[in-house]
Length: 161
Image (tube, rainbow, N blue to C red; front, side, top):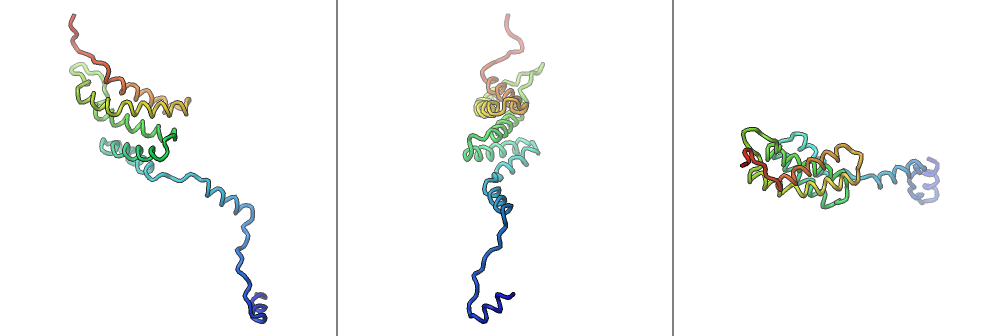
């Protein structure tokens, strides 16, 4: 408070100076500047994928594709999007499992695999290349490979001799 008395006597006000935060304050400022921001599209997509309905998975794919346009080389984002695409294909084609009474490689299933399979495979390959020891990346790659190639093969229940 002596500066207040002094300023009244002299008729001037001293300049306002921010107190120094020291080295720790400078460290926090650098950390905030370099911290990755959370992508709101990824957060929304993650919440949608927890519910796992077809509509939610399709909405998550749209959000993740939009995020990929901003950061196309993010391996974890590629993995998330490939996983979401695999979920869409799995739900729309009943997992492409083999059944004794009927085949699931219908024209509609083939359209789904042709539409989403190559994109899921490309994303899964990118994720697997960046994370070669990650079992989730390998699983996404296997699923995507299976769906992308299911459109190329036709099985029949009763092949002619």
